[in-house]
Image 1 (cartoon, rainbow over the protein chains, first blue to last red):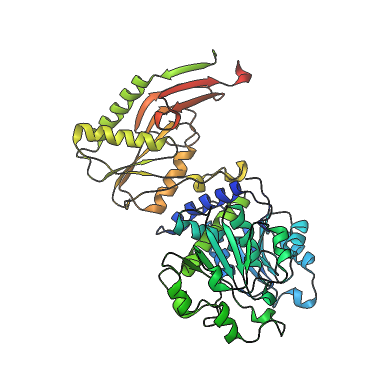
Image 2 (image 1 turned 180 degrees about the horizontal axis):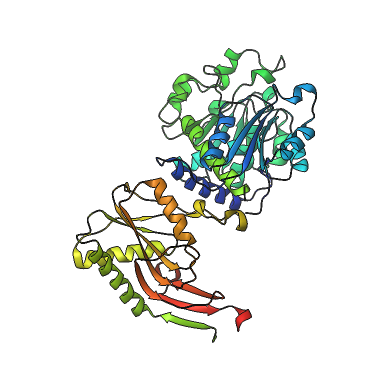
Length: 306
Length: 181
């Protein structure tokens, strides 16, 4: 309970993840009530600092803070003094002087949350920074998998798609491997980079460039979004070709067992990395991921907010 | 270990719970709409024992729920975050008679938090409080409706309730902290 910030899952123990998942379960019960609010963080002020666009993560943190009775203020770079050239550090100092107790930050620059943590007196939660980390997303993935399959240890989880640019993949690999799951990364070489980069950090994971082989015996398949905004020409021949080789198409859906969970962190490019059929299949838990996101973020805000 | 004194033996605990069960029955003649709600951890097995006892002599098995009050505590800020436990109440509390069950009544702050939590879960007709031990030193205007044993204590003493479901044995002991010896 002594953690101050939640910036990445690299330093977190399996025991701590377990505690967060247990807290999440209690928070989910709160969200199932008619009055979905408890007074735990009454009088606290959380600032949602979003330097990058986001729907689900920003609203999810907002709902989580409100469910704990905290005050939440949304800060977006657009329309703020950032446009007049105010630096990140000055912005954080200003928010602190205005009375912020906690900061949730989304930034396109990897590492930005560490800088914020150095200049802010309270807890900092990373809501996604560049390609680096997205810990609340990984924790909600862990929670959703365990909720459906009852465990994490020993499961085979395939992460397919634009892994090179993905902060979700990095945080998921930390979380899944720490909880004893087997992770297989699957992507075209241009969207993965050199294998030794991944194996140096996570020696236990598998790497594949063929999705059909990778899906053999998979308990979970997690499709990542093709990040069109991060694509500098030449990484992919065409979206159609990508979809044929790496998309969760209706044909691949038919070959997957009914028990293989289908996940996607959103927002989806339907028809590219995932077909509408796969997204809405009975074994898809994509909506559950969104719903569980609020409970996970409540658990993080509560545990750090003390 | 002369700083440790047993104040309830297993038999005395059993008799106290049987008496509380009868008092709950008598107060709520017919036991219509009564639900027992234990406050974790030790309030929950106590509520279950009271329900089992009432079932023995009335043939009515009352519903038992559990209510975690951590998120309603007034000392979260002062003492830091505590682990949150489970709340599980299968019944709508509106128009019910809720009997809260806890092991020890001390400052009354836990009960205050429980009352707030219940208000968020529904609108019972009535809330009653059953405790195994009332050790005094109330800081809020709260009293119990059903008490197993009143125990005068000083604030430096610890009252510990051990239950076989959690601790492997039934007893209540009172311990004096080192500084007081």
